[in-house]
Length: 455
Length: 112
Image (cartoon, rainbow over all chains, first blue to last red; front, top):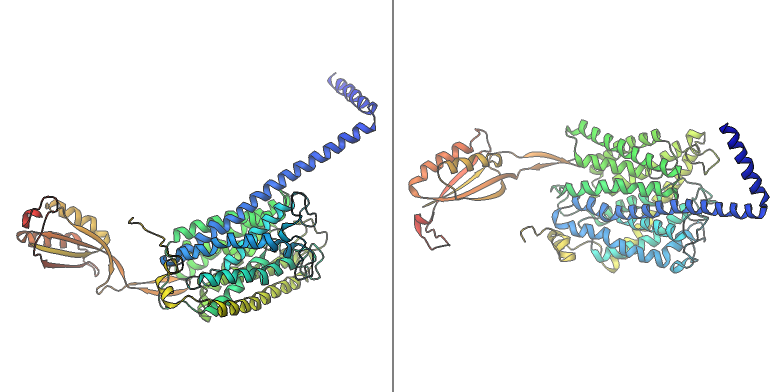
């Protein structure tokens, strides 16, 4: 009985609908389509705005605390300031010309001036990059990457760089290294852009080459150019507050979900996949660093755990939107062990003072991750590509493209950083005066003391 | 009056404080210090580099006591601070020229 009623009802409704004529249905269909689009946009945009906030949080306070806790008490403010000031400086550079140089079309190496002063960057999406969110969202999301990348370098020259020289250095570095690299990998027409017609498609989902290799290798160059801290390595220079570093590292882990999963540029299954891969890699790397340390020194440390987690997060960055969960675990396991080796053995073999292990973690982890992306990338995860991606898809040659991208990042970072250091040194002098370094940057550069606990 | 300056193991501080209270000495100044005598430091590893840490945390107690109670205080303090191992610390005795209670100008042993 009931079934007959339903059938009659359906027949009646269809008849009524059809009787009203195709014009009306067409209008309503268009309305439905635009509602669906709006809903999609709303979901994507809210995720992307949250991701942007998460990535900014990675710089302040994430990185500021992570690095701040690792330096001696007399330098904690100076160290945090190095991250913080970039939140101001890079924003202005990006707004004026940075966004344009990265994301407008130009040459394979650098974009043009189409978006100077963010001209035309508003509510309308830019379909080349993200078709469902305002271009302004995309712009501000990418800005947060431009902020944190140079901040990572400060780990190498911690406790001994002049603040004024650092500001000049960061400005020049953004123009000479970051903007070109970001354009090559992510900008339309960029040499290494895998999605938008690059001649050498290099898969870098969220910035293994653009962010971590460039900053990590630059860090090494800075550490070598500036020289070791006074008293290194005979004097122990232990972290003054591992609690701060711990908090910073956890903020980095959480923020990284915005960094990697947000690079899907949509609230999509790909974002979920990147989220999961990110978390799995961090977890595996934390464990592997801790266990390797336990075996080698007999004591598993918190510093080891958080360093491991960061190493895993770095390594998974280029791979996050391309690999399945269990390869992500493997990448993390490898990163924890490799980076441990880099910051303990390799650093002491060569004797460079990469104070906060920017090269050992970001440079090495980023290189490892970029290459392993060529191994584990699969179009089963990233359906935006309908061709074999990495070795697991049968395209082992991708590893070569990854190597090329890696080498370009290394080369650009080395040459660019050397040139910039020379310029800054000539104009301002990059190394703090010995008396300032001994007194501590907090007092000498900023006139502040971090802890006035007796007050 | 005598001033006793004792450098002891931090984990023995509570025992010493209780022992002093038990014999009626409840004025002392406590500082956290670092140092070493014959006790060797320990090795710490940071990022694969080994460091000798030979400035060890200790607690310094200072108290001023009447001359008559010197031996009693020395005995009580050393017994309560002792573990029998190297690193237990040392105690020094100084002559005190004058003592004044700030609240009411009491002087000498009545100020203690």
